[in-house]
Amino acid sequence: STSPKTAPTTPNTQNELPPATASGSRMNATFVTLARNSDLWEISRSIRQVEDRFNRKFNYDWVFLNDDDFDDEFVKVTTSLVSGKTKYGKIPTEHWSFPDFIDQDKAAAVREEMKEKKIIYGDSISYRHMCRYESGFFFRHPLMLDYEWYWRVEPSIELFCDINYDTFKFMADNKKKYSFVLSLYEYVETIPTLWDAVKNFTATHPEHVVKDNSMGFLSDDNGESYNHCHFWSNFEIGNLDWLRSKAYVDYFESLDHSGGFFYERWGDAPVHSIAAALMLQKDEIHFFNDIAYYHVPFTHCPTGQQTRLDLKCHCNPKDNFDWNGYSCTSRFYEVNGMTKPEGYEKEQ
Ligand code: GDP
Ligand code: MN
Image 1: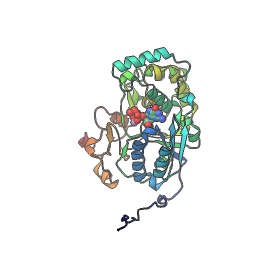
Image 2: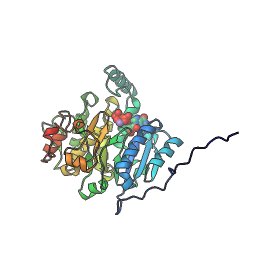
Image 3: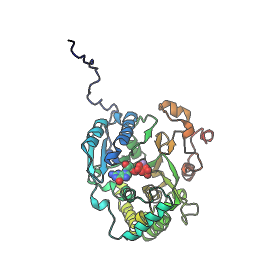
Image 4: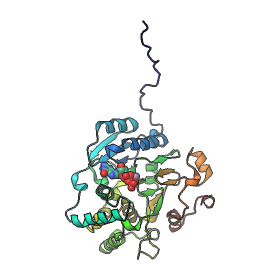
């Protein structure tokens, strides 16, 4: 009788983590992801791309936050993929529930109405908690208090170019506090009274509005009305101390009390963007042209062929959203008196 054959063992066994190849010190920074256990395989795809394109060279930490407990599989798989330390936090119930000043019946009636109007996530309670959490609480989670800088990563994103420098250090060295790769117009049905709430806040707290702000990015009539431009917050590299500042926390609390996270469906993107545009100086907001990024349904592919070749990009420049009429990035360049990247007309 012949004994069963065993397959030859390949040398592809577990290795030590490759050493971080970038020399020098590290910033006090972390990646941060809000996710459910069911997001495991989609966040794994994102992590792998962030590691391949950037973090294997730097080994920054990664904080995962969830309104539920992370399960063993989620922890094991994500720990194996991240080259830095991973930390897992549960969100306290107070930060993921209806505040007592919210009228539950009124909120339920709005969800019903938005469902009929087929407004995206309009009937969802959890999506509203998520938007409110990203707007006002993630930076105050105990695990985040150790850090000064964050990079937000969502499930199912893609990075298309190498990032060969420390983006956190870049932010610090260039006095940047907030950054983006994609900007666009918000669905007005989700934020009909947001601008009124903002005006109410700026009237009560004029001391929090800085002089050299980006009102021109938000408004075409000097602040009378909102043009719905915002930075897309599923990607953010930003400063946590700014979000934890009295100015930002006063802003969030003022907006929160007006009820729009539940009586409408305010997204964290316009909430963060308006804060950055009014409470940071113009030149504290950075557009990362060299970070090529996709989150359904939009792509930011760097303008300029030489940049794309140098950074080994694999995005199709035709997919770039920046110079499209629905993007607000042209406006960002104009407000800041910046020259658009060479070749942008050809990629319009
Ligand atoms: P979209 O990008 O606006 O379509 O919204 P996503 O579904 O991507 O949600 C935004 C972020 O919040 C992602 O990182 C999700 O993983 C996370 N998220 C959304 N809903 C929940 C939830 O109910 N619980 C938890 N823990 N995370 C959520
Ligand atoms: Mn998303």
